[in-house]
Image 1 (cartoon, rainbow, N blue to C red):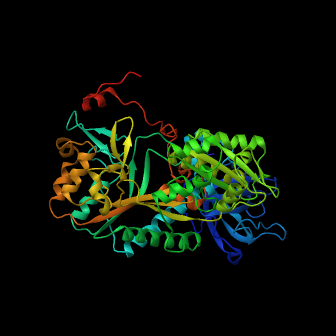
Image 2: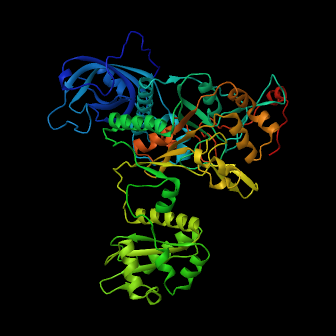
Image 3: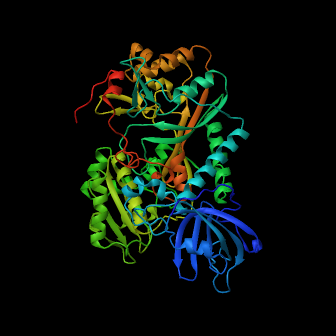
Length: 595
């Protein structure tokens, strides 16, 4: 069958718009064959486009020629149909479709293109591997579920732009071909043909450029921008990703956080019809670690840690007493009504979670009406057992889990344990969205491999003013003017107030072991700009892909990106990365690497 021309035809409706009120109207639909039922005398086609699905009926009593041609139609063929809108017969309506009350009775058919048999069923269950679906991503995106996610992404981006435009921000594009600067991950390098032997880098973020825009007096900048990081991947990472990037002049932390709070409130109300109460809860980094064991706490459920070091130190249990004598702590996690939820095997599995997280072991107490059911019972006096129950709020049928070690080890182990228990007992309300700010991170941390201090965020983060004097004596105690926005246990954005004083910036480089010559080589353009009246400024970057994933309820950011990479940073669709011609390498002054 030859392919027909659509010349002279114009689509009148999409496949999701016809209703009972359109009965008797002539319509022209164009789309893909989503399903077919050939009953001989009648042929039913489900015609699909991005608007939805409409049932088309080919009846020889209406038009014999189009009915004859419809016999050869197959899944994913592209067709155009002209006909009249009619009500479906009583009892044949489809309440699951917006168009389910009507059908198009075809008077003319054009076959605009044929299709090979797809490698997986587009309109069926998702039964193909992810590798196959990514190889044929353009077919996967024909699924309404996939299209709806990407359409929702578009709506979220549009709403963000509207909000920031109202707030006086100016959208400015920054370069993709830029200078390689250390920002925490490996750069993707691009060799220069014109300047052989030299390289551009794809930006990990527009960090330095947005600071330059503040120095230039733009006051409020934003950009929904692609960023690139050559790092190990996981479900919420991609080598190229999108962030909502902004910077503001003459502001403090509360001003920047306030803009993002307003953005979240606007987004969730307009897109999901969910009201977000402001202000969003704030926790310092230390509070988050002490209470939840992570700087990305999921606060949709309680189960916070309780410090019982003082009571444990009065017990006869040597493990607890030794830990306390070495400067450690003992903390407890209470699982309400959890005594009957975990068998001995289940408790052993929880203990493995602790050891896998760096802890030495897990102790447990099942609280009953008669007292403690635990190997610890004999090491605690009646008074201390009662004191511990009272301090952690444990009653009959509760399970108390205890870990003793250095504070960092205890916090991390209990943090992993808290999330494992929540998953096992279904304690996390999936229909709730819980935001929290985590602030005042450490400015610096010690890198064991490198043998020196490194910036927790980046070297342009300003220290808390009260802590500046500690830079010379106890730099690891200095707190940063930084803040992360966490949603449902996922960090969706972070930022800081920047250093705008050239002397303080030079001092920060010195502490990080960056020599003046190295600083000029890597950041000379920023250091030069800071000499010309840099205003106090700060900003933040929002992980747009992560936010969209949460708002659409999908598990991986790969599902909210049109053409994502795999966890090995490859593209099954295009076979990228791939080898290039010798001539191209020669132009760049490069030699082929023997794999």
